[in-house]
Image (cartoon, rainbow, N blue to C red; front, side):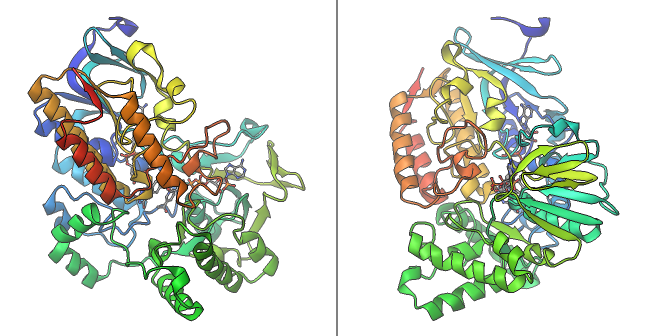
Length: 538
Ligand code: FAD
Ligand code: N01
């Protein structure tokens, strides 16, 4: 075996990459198995998404009570979420609390990026190398690197020449950023843009919003946690969590759909959409069971939102630019905002139609489009992530026979159950491509993935299994099944990160499993119960 950087490798049972929701819970479970574990984290502290995305306005859009771990019952009541949708700061404080409570920090090496991982067939181990020169050898490698953790900036000519301040929402600095008295450009109007734009508008001298595709946005109606809701949660969380895990497609409990949108009268639909719009949050999309699968049903929901945009935005020209067209609502992830559309009524906010007049360059002084140049003091890139695969393919991962994961995935991220991939033995991914994670309450999916991987590792250790990988056949059958489910939805009908369309050259494949977390859990359980069906085992 080659020892890189001249260092002798440290031997452990399990290497984990990442210390967000996934890595923290994994470390806890591995310790529970009594396995020696190393965790590497590129950031300086725990939190993952909530460590990096510190932009003003960042918060979850699954309700805080549900967007939290369920594995430790005491946590359900000892942590008191102050708001319906918790802020980044509060979620980060929660993850720090969990790390302290379970003494997890001592097991994590921070400020350390994993740069490569190589499978060695003779020793049946992974050798992981970091940017600090550490080399660790382990029987198992688990990637908790995150679904939305590889930020991307567009390749605009001159992007590095800008002389003002520039930030990406997903790599926001820890020091406060002031917008006061500044001319600020925000590029991007996805979930991050929708959250940051109203906050910047409050203090910037002038805000220019560069919107390429109009996204659908639903009001959050955030506020202090409703005390009746909290009391109900505290009294019933074991059952509520069970329903979210086992009986919901989403991993959270939505207001149940009212059947088919097409079976309802226009008046009934209007009343139902209004009720959900008033209630706020992502339940809007679950008003009817066919919004995600039937274009005509989808149009009824999309038209309702379009009418609200025309109502809220005073300048009709601006409203027309903000109105999403040409793709179904939900095919780009629905955005949940606070005063997003209202912000365009402010005199210090200008919407730039970057579809009609695309951005052509960044200069020393600002942003150039095909129609104008806008001088600014700051550029905020709310331009998203190389989702699901980016964090993995940015690491040089080589499996059996030295095959690189990046090469294997050149045509799309082939996987089995969204957790494993053929040719990469003793290797697991949490919230990986092909799992339902990003179409669900991700924390529910994380707990399921981690529990399943923990059971697999425990079973291997107990039974002296030294090597496991999915067969190509099992992978193929799983991918066909996933594809058939995806084809029955409207999810592929937009250019979004769901299908890799935001990254030039990325193959167009739906990156998440659409069968629902309930069905997915049953499938994973059945595979395990059948002695890890679909896996080649030594
Ligand atoms: P992450 O939290 O992304 O953690 C992965 C960690 O791995 C990171 O800290 C990263 O630094 C580290 N890492 C990656 N590569 C390496 C490497 N090579 N070496 C060392 N360390 C590495 N989901 C929801 O369900 N509801 C929400 O409301 C919601 N809101 C979101 C808001 C934002 C702004 C974003 C970006 C995402 C949101 N998500 C939401 C998705 C969110 O990513 C997940 O809910 C969850 O936090 C993922 O946890 P994780 O531990 O799997 O990954
Ligand atoms: O990223 P995005 P995000 N020129 O990819 C634009 C989660 N999240 O960070 O749509 C001009 O959605 C791009 O335009 P277009 C959530 O899962 C959750 O906002 O490609 N514009 C788009 O408007 C979310 O879905 C929360 O035409 C360019 C924007 O940048 C995921 O993270 C909050 C461009 C990118 O939108 C990613 O969200 C934040 C170019 N060259 C994030 N390139 C919650 O509220 C890109 N854009 C829970």
